[in-house]
Image 1 (tube, rainbow, N blue to C red):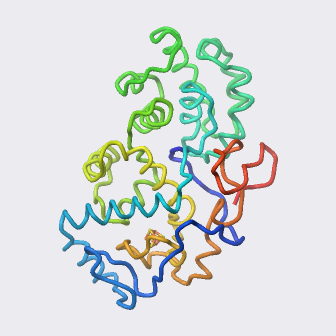
Image 2 (image 1 turned 90 degrees about the vertical axis):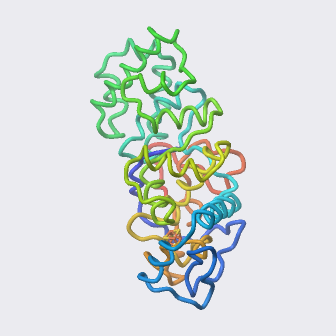
Length: 312
Ligand code: SF4
């Protein structure tokens, strides 16, 4: 996923046709309603005006706008899900550790052989580091990741009876496991709500003026205060989906963005609808997704196994 994740998402932009989302993009010729919905179509706001609007937005208006964004993203990404392939909590934990600084696609193409060789914490704890390094080499930083995998597997075997614990404080005590990884595991393997503050989440919530914080823990706290706890996990998936497909780091596809009317940063990227459409990725651009085994309601194509065609 990078269900998650801090994946680099380095794939090129897709040039294919956009898979129609359930909710069509609204007219965004005039920019978004940044402050309590005051700015509508035909009232193009300058960056300075948008900044002023954002500053003037009351707490109540911000909460209302943020929750509306979440509701609209839920319609667009009705199929949002963790984008790491996994069958059990241990596989999700391992995959999430591997997802640092790479794409979920690369992890998903790597883990089948790893899990076949080391299906349990006990098996991975006893692994020869050189063998693990070789298997996970495609994910980058493979020496450090191998240390984390063998370390956390040893801790699971020795301290938790070979089971992945379902408590935050236990998870973060494992080697190589921080709050982000812990929340991914808690939210998706244990059904315990958590906010996943990865690179996409950080970028988007700042673009939406939900927070001005840059520290992940403070972002987690401020965004968590806007939404009911039960919404945290799916909110995280939707925000990350949007960041990967439309609201990219360098070239956000504002002209093809279904929530542009709610975004104070409309115009930060391409606003021409046709040009913006060409920036869409994964199923939005008509390309395969990141999971080799996507959920049944995923409207795109499964990702190819290692050595297959590149995803969009
Ligand atoms: S793509 Fe543009 S309009 Fe859409 S959320 Fe990102 S910055 Fe805002």
